[in-house]
Amino acid sequence: MRLPHARILAPAAALLLLAGCSIELQHGLLEEDANAIYVLLTENGISATKAKEEGGNTTTYLISVPKTDAAQAAKLLTEHSLPRPNDIGFATIRQGKGMIPTQVEERAMMLEATGGEVSASLNKVDGVLEARTIVMIPEKNDLAQPDKKPQPAAAVFVKYRASMDGKPPLDEVAVKRFAASAVEDLKPENVTVLMSQAQPATNELTEDEHLQYVLGLRMTKASAGTFRAMVAVVALVMLGMAGLTTWTFLRGGSGSQRPKRTA
Image (tube, rainbow, N blue to C red; front, side):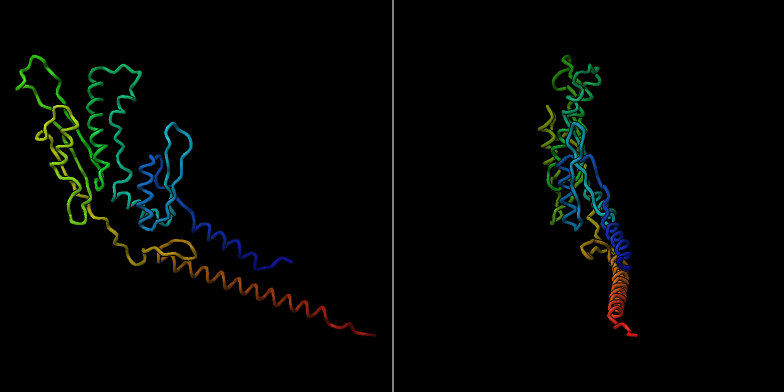
């Protein structure tokens, strides 16, 4: 016999499946960026999933999060400047292998590659969210006197998150020395540094926006109340149908045991 309350299971299962749906947050990530994003989201209570993408010459990864956490996850990535800029440095020149660049193009690629190497190194410093470097190396002229030769110059932009004591991970002197040591004939005094402190992470969520677990599912407090009410209604209906089915079964069983009348 088909139980009437079995019809209630389909909506309940569909409800649980919809609550657990995930959405793709970032794709085409290098493993280093994927790991950084995964750790950041996990530390902030978001159930992120890291998966390897198929196809392509370079191995890339994607990060998925539950739909209910998508807005908070995107906000965290913006606050922490993730994924970080992909400065490929001298790989710029290797990508042009086999081509015949003009002298101007070759020079531009060299300047971009040199600045990219400096930026890529600074981006690996803990606390540095984003670094950009522009290098200007004047063309050499053998006819110019040594004391009148134009000097190389560089401009470095560093966006950082301050430590607990309010200090940046690197000071301007350290950035100038590092950039000067990476570029031929570049002097620290010819390096311009712009330091920009990132705004503190804002975790000012309203009471209804705080996340919590309900039956193993993460959702906001506002959604949790509605979800609990729906689950309670479904449970009561299922109990009622189960009771009705049991009563019907017992009544039918007792009726079949009635003694037959004799003529």
